[in-house]
Image (tube, rainbow, N blue to C red; front, top):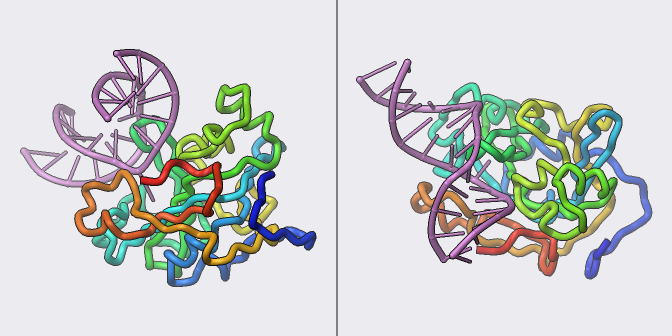
Length: 214
DNA sequence: CGAATGATCGGCT
DNA sequence: GCCGATCATTCGA
């Protein structure tokens, strides 16, 4: 694992608690999720990766958010719930995009996980992706990382708060300094008018495991 | 009920 | 760089 510039201690890992997710500021949570580990366990098979790229979305004033303007539908309902759940939806009829619901109840916001650095059980992730060699293409991009981890829309609404479930996020004591985080505009949201330019896309500086910056 | 539309990806030129 | 894939969701009739 390439951890250049990243400090790692050998303290035990821990599941991120409810208090991490229910904070008000989804932009801060987006930054805090960098360096955390997204883990799935499906049919007793565990796969994981370190989060290296995220995007923030919030309903209150962000036209790019599915729940903007208090748009409450069966799809977006989970975003109005309390933070600490998965929001997964299908994009372009093909891709399952995984988001972390954040904030208190009735404050709809979410963080899209855009890229991970594969860590545990890379052979299974390669198999799910139909690839032979480990490369950033395995998991750089929100659609492909879901495929690598086996995440589908059926995960939407699932709690992230227990490592007894099939999906959760852990802190493994990776400490990132703020100068190791780069911000840029989000992609694929041209309809979002002035919000297009908001620098709500975050990545770990110098990580080769992110998708390409805009 | 029909039609439009994506928070993307990979293959082809 | 461009383009088609492919379907759940959404909205309006």
